[in-house]
Length: 335
Image (cartoon, rainbow, N blue to C red; front, side):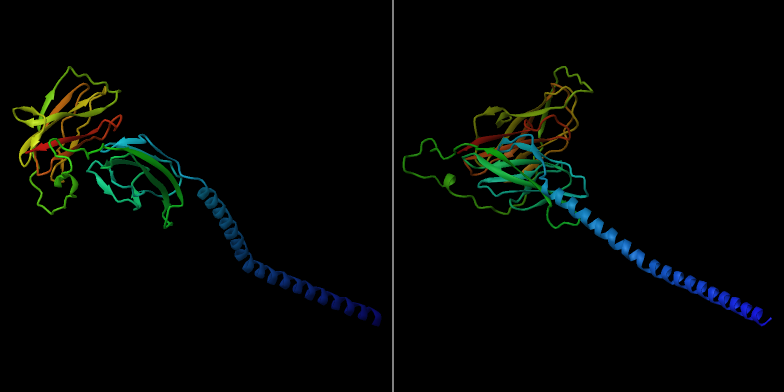
């Protein structure tokens, strides 16, 4: 009887110890689970950030090593002519940039539908798109090679992280240093050698052009192309053409615009550089059908200079080529 009671006590003690051990294991497992939950998110987050940083660094290094492609439709132009520069596409959010190196006697202008804007050399300009049309104005007697740089700048960058370079040759306007007719050897003329001093003047009322349209059985192809071409006709007065204009007098500049394409153009405008250092911009002109031309007569006022170089440019929204949209003509002013 005594042995049986002792055996039962031992079994009860073992059961109690087993239950206590099981409870302890359960508590240990629960504590370890809590610690793992606390530490795991931070560890995974750190590993993810590290992987993302390595990936971004590799992508940035790969992009930075690749130069930006750039191409111009005209790499050789004369003063008053234009060239369209196309920059390669970049699969990122940001802006394209343009700048050019300072070159003696050469200034570049950005061509826009609302007028040209002078671009200061050495200054970086942000572009609205990956294309810019530039016009060159040169007074040099020798050809000039103008270097330019394009770039792409992301919204988080202070400077462009991808760049490309190119150059355009500006053809010389010609040597204007020859002696004027009747000048005695050894004499000098003030008008040719003296640099003009810019004066602040009140802009004069812009002259109204006289437009004459000549029709040559025009027919339009809706699938064709538009190609406006402008050319110099001459100067003179209402009675006809002359070889030159008188100083400090009124005269007329004659030129024509013709659609040599196969499709009717949109409305268009033109600009003319005047002797008083102003630029005349016309109202919108009527559309031209294929082979249709407009002969324009613009009244101008001359000054004391011996000559003036007129730059006439056509502004149009659609055109096959811009190479024939402008011309430059020097006109003599006589006493």
